[in-house]
Length: 397
Ligand code: FNR
Image 1 (tube, rainbow, N blue to C red):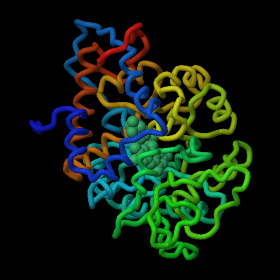
Image 2 (spheres, protein in one colour; image 1 turned 90 degrees about the vertical axis):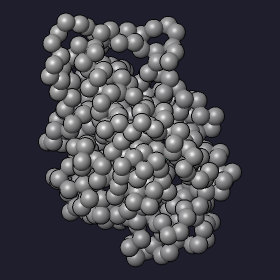
Image 3 (cartoon, rainbow, N blue to C red; image 1 turned 120 degrees about the horizontal axis):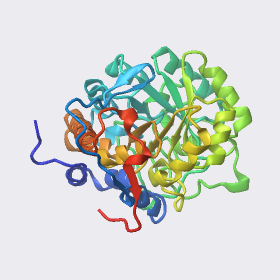
């Protein structure tokens, strides 16, 4: 059952690193600017220690939780990450199949290299959610939402931490290009998108045969910006500086009702959590985009308690960022999260062995969650409370 070459997520990361080309490795692994928020997302977990309880008969441990009317095998899902075919030709389809096997929820990026319909078919009745960048050209978003409804997606996760795109210097230096034959699959059929729709992330002056990075110089147009026109590219359309609570959440809720829930992904403060509740969203993901947007922002685990306190159980609060072990999931739940999501570890699994690698990644986490629960003296996820945690002065691994 064990893969003796890969017994930890750290080892998975190392295997993946030597299998990916430099451009892909840099694109997946880097954070914005100096990468300090990316690092702090991970290190935040080391500031807490578990207070294990003993002699509690933990012979039956139930790691499952309810989410979207489904019993997820563990309180952990797969966060949406763009362009998974860079890691392995089977990309998002391999991830979907692995999720189905593991009984775990998958988030699909709008900027995936597989269509949302193909992913829905691959994952079947296991819940899947669509990550959404709400475009200024509403018609494109409207079409995507209609397709997601038809394909059975349970929710849209509106990404709210990208009013501008974070600065990722390795992407700029590598002049990132999505290699052929891969495409940003959800937008290739849009009549207004010609071949340039395959451009993953390009500068606003990108030519149709270029596949440039989202962080290409010149995209911060500041006051001179004009709403994007023409082909949908990550770079021209993903960041939407006009997004705001009143107009846009209302619009999105109407478009998604009644089939799909509306969640906001990228909340990091109590103030915004309260606004999310006030605007009637169905759930919150505490996230900083895996440290890829505002460097210097609070680690997500450090932001979690204030969000949980503000929401007071009115809607679910999820968290992602820096989760690399089952004990991290335990700690996030103890601090009040209802559910966790992982981004990069799944990409590393894909790069290691395609679907088999993702299955391994999910198995490692699932085993670690179960072991942690048992050794801490808990048999049900609901039992995991802050009583099991203590913050220490000195972090360490
Ligand atoms: C992401 N993330 C992301 N988020 C989103 O809302 N839409 C997207 O298209 C992407 N794309 C993406 C690509 C890559 C390569 C990475 C690493 C991340 C962010 C993602 O959903 C999640 O918030 C983080 O990945 C969580 O942090 P960890 O688990 O990677 O540390």
